[in-house]
Amino acid sequence: MAKNLGEPGYRAKQLLDAVYRQRVESIEQISTLSQPLRLKLAGTGVSLGLPRIEQRFVSQDGTVRYLIAFADGQSVETVWMPEGDGGEAGDGSEAGELAERFSGILEESAQPTPSKRRPVQKQGQNQGRSTICISSQVGCAVDCQFCLTALLGVKRNLTAGEIVGQVCAVLKDQKVSPPEDRINLVFMGMGEPFLNYENFIKAARLLVEEVGIAERRMTVSTAGIVPRIYDFGREKIRPKLAISLNASNDTLRTQLMPLNKKWNLEMLMSAAREYPLRTREWITFEYVLLGGVNDEPENAKEVVDLLQGLRCKVNLIALNPGPGIEFTTPELERVTAFQMTLRAAAIPAFVRRPRGRDIYAACGQLKRTVEIATAPVP
Ligand code: SAH
Image (cartoon, rainbow, N blue to C red; front, side, top):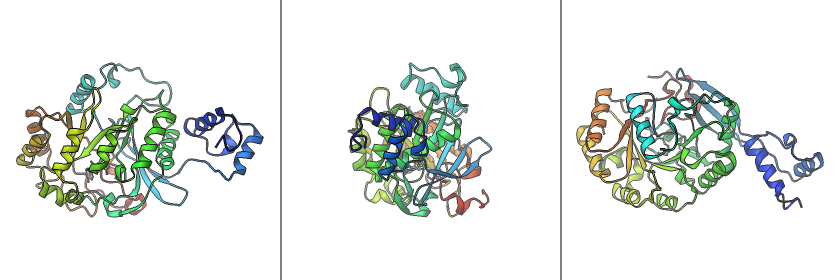
């Protein structure tokens, strides 16, 4: 754009800086450019700004669910978790402590454990564990039977700018700024990132290069779009990979996640085994536990067989309920028993503490706020 305007290359840098770091909301606010240049820029018909935060829901646990609207009026949900764990590690529970130690050993041995050794940051309130969960599509086409987002169907893909825009809007609202404030990012909101692959990758690059969030602080989760897992492994800049497993055999998985008809467990597990892990990296498998459906001891043993020998860990998520979801949340004992079976087989398994369940902000609960904001939480 700078080139088209006959401007030197450093103008491009000034523009990127204004958009992604200063998070200006209009051309007028770009103070590094002269007034004539701002007018010239406006004359090209370019407009810039952040997506609009339409609503905020604040949970008892501090989680904030944002309804964020784009220029065409479509909206998605984005979640701020002040003590999030990057979809990865500690949540203050015993499992979380173990996860932190585990990540300390395997992933970030050079980094101090955030909650214990890091001094309180000056900028913003961030203690180094905050996580933003972002959406990649308006709705979702994958149709997982236990997920509220599936009920929307897919409306459209988000552009790379809209994906990054969610992050910038939330950073601005929370008054935090990476890299000074440590922010984790998970592509685990509405939509299937690997069905909007190009824009997702472009967004990931912008987030690393322009917004300043480190790759190792980002995780993308896929329901299992197998060809894109191979593509993803070849990307130079790539977040960590999480795969939503959710079932221990094909019959069950096809029932819960219809996409398993197209890409079954054998194909999925081959992709996972061939995935080029970097140093101190592992694949995370998510497993949503549905009472009496996929949480039997037999299922846990099947998961062990599937994952044996893979450098991976498992995040167990007890179902977050919602209107229109026919499954039940298993008792804690069953969740723990499942976890222990995995651990007995030397597979690191962690139970994810649900965040923001009271405001429908937890995994699988993102829908359009307006539609369910008044629905009672079961
Ligand atoms: N489409 C991607 C990104 C979304 S991640 C994917 O499927 O991986 C959202 C995570 O929440 C997934 O692991 C999904 O399996 C899980 N999930 C969906 N519905 C849920 C629910 N009702 N309760 C708990 N977890 C759920």
